Length: 261
Ligand SMILES: [Zn+2]
Ligand SMILES: [Zn+2]
Image 1 (cartoon, rainbow, N blue to C red):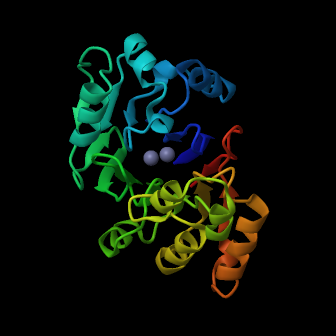
Image 2 (cartoon, rainbow, N blue to C red; image 1 turned 60 degrees about the vertical axis):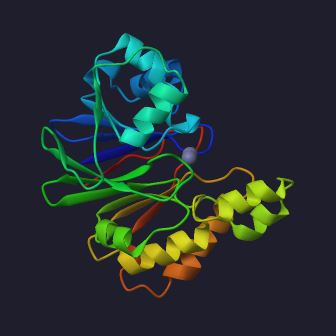
């Protein structure tokens, strides 16, 4: 299983997951043109994509979707709520026959990849995180969630790779000029995870097999990459297998380093 994050953050999200039989995208929050260009840079054609999984309807996760569905016949998987929000509320073109509505905890098989969506807590109609398996190899994709419930903690534990939100540093967020109600939205149960909450959760759920952690959906204004890595070091320094984990910062405008398990 191979991971490349094409973009991550409030201005657009898209991640490519590949196995020897399958290529899927998680979110298409870049313009279609930019998405195709970013894929070409890593020698992948958009026509090679077997399926697309959408987390929720916010524009930074679906920006390229309307053009993509006009030009391609790719199966798109999403929750009923996300489908409703996209098709009905945004009046998103005509109904597309390749939309597949899926339920939380329902496994979807794409060749040798098993994808299991799970319901998360965010200010969207029915937002999903995803757990992916290729045999015993496990990857977790979780961004845009105000908190991680105990039930979800069970679902995402012991993964080989995590792509997980570390959105903001609370003090930095409070020091921004953003209006009070926006700060409350971000901090709330339906907002975004802060650095400490993410890292303490990770500390509880990683195991000796965990190899790569991408910290994702990082706020440009209310976070800082050096500070985030210092916080990683503080929180993980006493963890026995810290030296076995490679942490990456997923960036908004740069394609990430590729990891493979
Ligand atoms: Zn987002
Ligand atoms: Zn969102």
